[in-house]
Image 1 (cartoon, rainbow, N blue to C red):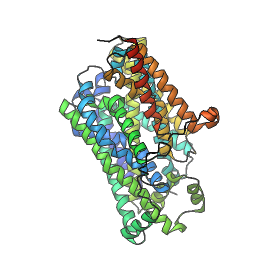
Image 2 (image 1 turned 30 degrees about the horizontal axis):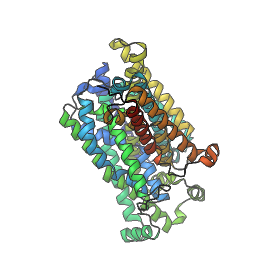
Image 3 (image 1 turned 90 degrees about the vertical axis):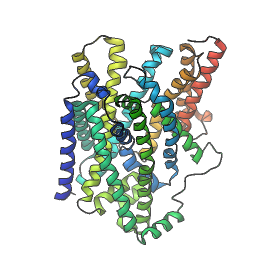
Image 4 (image 1 turned 180 degrees about the horizontal axis):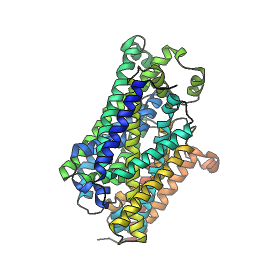
Length: 497
């Protein structure tokens, strides 16, 4: 299948605009401070749209509809936790980082617990970004395979190469301004799809609601006390912990706080980015529910091959199929551009921040503390290139996954390694020393590995398999660090300054 001329024109216009923005701001990114902090002079609304764009990757654009199509709205509870996490972030996290001078979100951990804590948190962040980049590139390749008929591997390779090149030239200033532009495109694409589906489902909105209600598609999950299933409360707690981790210790967000021109603008950016995601993510879940009603009432519109894959749980494939087969010319190009926008926003952010951490927390910390500006820029460029290669390789390894939302959530829970627990231990327990924190981290990582093995490789743990929901992996890992670290500090009885 090939795209009509009008769709190709829409895509070409989008790419030209993106490259033009990157090239325009590249001149402001020729120093380490400009490349990583944008000189601390950006308005809050632009930074906020960039934070929002970081959230809405192709994971949201394709995996959320896929999840709603295959199941229900239970995963939307993750978004419900955002206002709570945003309030905490604005109240404590933003001022905490704005008053410091370090570009790294993990610099303070060294001052609090020692160099190992900084290196541990930085490594966990980098692993999380590798998983994120892989998930994003893989999901972007799905609709392009149906559009172009190319092999998934070639699409992933081309996407990784082009995004890495774009991220190299512009630095954080280009990334943030391009994110703002891309956020507008992806919101427009999501709204347009939602409106078209609302009209095209047989019976219109009443027919859609009837089919969805019959199959309990709007359910937010059980409100019971069970910790074994992904109940409303389990997803809510998971979302709160992950979002506190995002706003409190994730370099992708912390680095954006530092690009804002004032404390007020930084707080505004976090509120805007977080609250905008709540309704927009609802659009994505609605698209998945509408697709279910659309194809349930018209099953002949799905190919036998796709019906077989959907029966195996691969709901992520339905929205790309709808885009390439049912949308009118011109609209297809806009929606594909929106998917590109969602993916490129996240990928460029991950690459820039991963390169920043590579420079600040590893190269300058352990190799060349007093390296000059030119040397630092070389490390940033090489870091961007290297992480682009690793992220692309990860995407290739993800080919064949059933639900990318489940895969991403599990990987994020494992690779985050309880970073939030270490951060909170340093703030909440003044008695905690580096040794107490290390004991807490060992306990937390042990819990994370045990629960991960229970979910992914149950034969390894046998009768000691965890009966709890895998979504509680990060939650319990965080609690283990706090409890064990706090108890170790209390028993030692030594108070730090």
